[in-house]
Each structure stands twice: as C-alpha cells, then as structure tokens.
Amino acid sequence: MRCTVNDSVRQESNIDKMIFSIPHVIAYVSQAMTLMPGDLILMGTPEGISPVQPGDVMTVEVEGLGVLRNAVISEAEHRRRIESV
Image 1 (tube, rainbow, N blue to C red):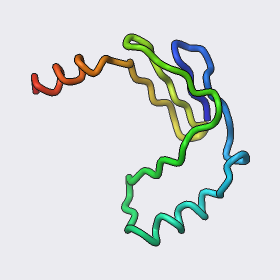
Image 2 (image 1 turned 135 degrees about the horizontal axis):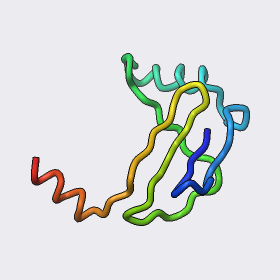
Image 3 (image 1 turned 45 degrees about the horizontal axis):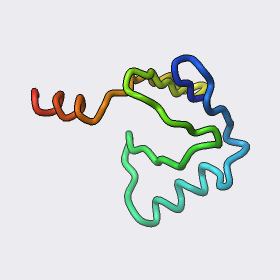
Image 4 (image 1 turned 90 degrees about the vertical axis):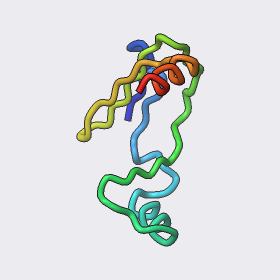
C-alpha cells in the first residue's frame, strides 16, 4: 500500500504490519452488519500522514488491486460542484 501526494511518497506499508488480520476484521465487522459485494472496510492508515492543500494530487496504490488518483479541492469548490448538479 502506498500513498503519494504530488508524486512524493507520504505513506508506504504492507498488510504484514497490520494489528489485526484481514479475515479477523471481516469477521468482526460481519457481527454487526451484513457485508455486500462492493462494500469497503476502512481500517486506518500507517504513519506518515501530512496535510494536503487544494491542487495537490493524491494517489493511493494497492499492489494487485489498482491505483486511485484524485485531485484535492477546497470545500467551497466541492459545494459549488454539488450545487451545479
């Protein structure tokens, strides 16, 4: 798992460093709700967090899964986009 901001690595880790295994987390969450295909379980983040600013580009890559890339926008810009829909 790797997170970059403007192509600078901010976070990098792997599942071996997780406190709880993925099967353990799935079993635990399944006790409280029914998981459906496409559901996501967000489990936190490794060390290395830092502030981002509007205009930054964040990229998250999970080996074997893919890459997600998004530009950071301001809250005002977010509201403007929602209101124009």
